[in-house]
Length: 127
Image (cartoon, rainbow, N blue to C red; front, side, top):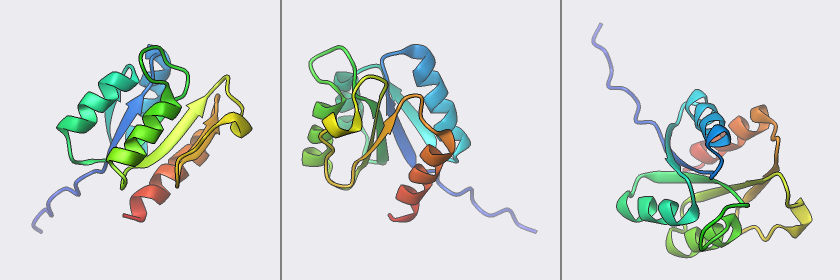
């Protein structure tokens, strides 16, 4: 039986300044069946987004050092790359304080990994 070509995995960009949390998020994204890219802050995330056209979902912490926090990054993504889905996470900001872009989803840390995986997979199947 001939092997079929591997299914191209959808790409998720994980933006998290805390290395351990970034590693855990990357593991979750990969375990959910996606290819993960990582950025340590919003500026690096924008550079990656500018250099690649295959990113489908951005998962970003809200609380990050640098010129932009996660909400500003989400707004920039929605303006410049409208098809990309956005998931924001935070251990400090409460949901009612979050300005989510259209179709954006918010998770409090520590987030429910099962719900996160389902959210990623739902975004992936609606493309």
